[in-house]
Length: 82
Image 1 (cartoon, helix red, strand yellow):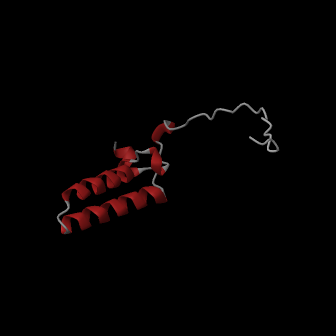
Image 2: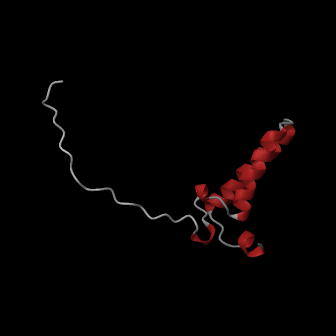
């Protein structure tokens, strides 16, 4: 866990931690406790490097292989009247 927190920092991780901290501070000032939980979630995503939404796939668990679509061309008949 210590290695995960101390290594692999990117700009996105830093932004998540900073914005999460801002959300937490603002929600505490305004006494909006559910929003503080949302801020804690964002800050922890950046701090502990989880969540593929930020591109922080720890260990490569978010890799998905794309499937190719059948390359058949289907003609469209635009001249036909219905």
